Amino acid sequence: MIIDGVEMRGVELGDAAGLAEAFTRNRAFMAHVEPVRTEAYYTEQGQRERIEGMLAERDAGRIVPYVFVETATGAPIGAINLGSIAHGPLCSGGVGYWIDPVWHGKGLATAGLEEVCRVARDELGLHRVEAGTLVDNLASQRVLAKAGFEFYGLAPRYLHINGAWRDHRLFQRLLHDDPPAP
Image (tube, rainbow, N blue to C red):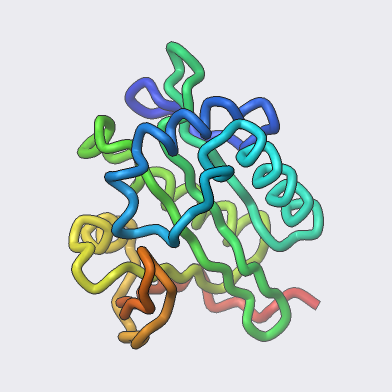
């Protein structure tokens, strides 16, 4: 998928240096919505190890990781991952995403969510995709609403973010009502 000079594609080991730079550049901006990270996370080696883990999880069918890259330079400017993939009677996955603030307002996160939901439905046969946001993350909540997600509950002390257990608003998008694949 390409939109407004940005391509969304599967993450690759070659993205490690660019992601390390992007996470370092956005460290202060993302601190309030992210877990506390080790210094190694912000290095090329740390990102290489993270990507290797994601690719192993992808190969096991548990995650589908994507990166947003600027088409002119190939530099990563965000990511979106469909994870916690479960089949059987649940047929569900969870989505998380971020976009460099320089690229906010261009519809990238919304388009990425639409594509992830298409993959979840058409390629993985999932029934639903869920997402959670911090209670005060109104921008992300607007993105989810634009992509057809509906609020369904509040999860107290849901994730350990920025050094404390934080409440999250939970959203889901139902993709179809077909029975699970055998």
